[in-house]
Length: 74
Image 1: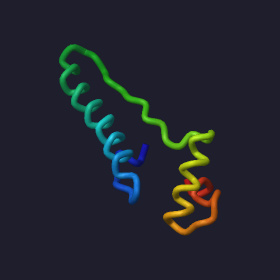
Image 2: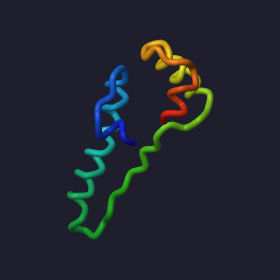
Image 3: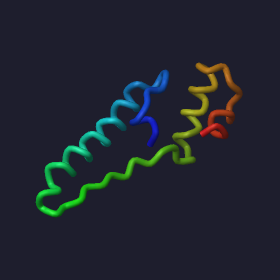
């Protein structure tokens, strides 16, 4: 997820939690490499579903864009 690698307006908490997943994964990997253990994380981006409709409406309102445009951009 790119949200963990760069900040985005209006979604600071979401970006921070994605960054935490990345950092935790890297730290665990560095701790466990000496035991031959690789650590990976899956942090998916946008998933089209009911939740996305609310996200799209939120961005449409605050970025003054028509609904559906953010979905096409992502």
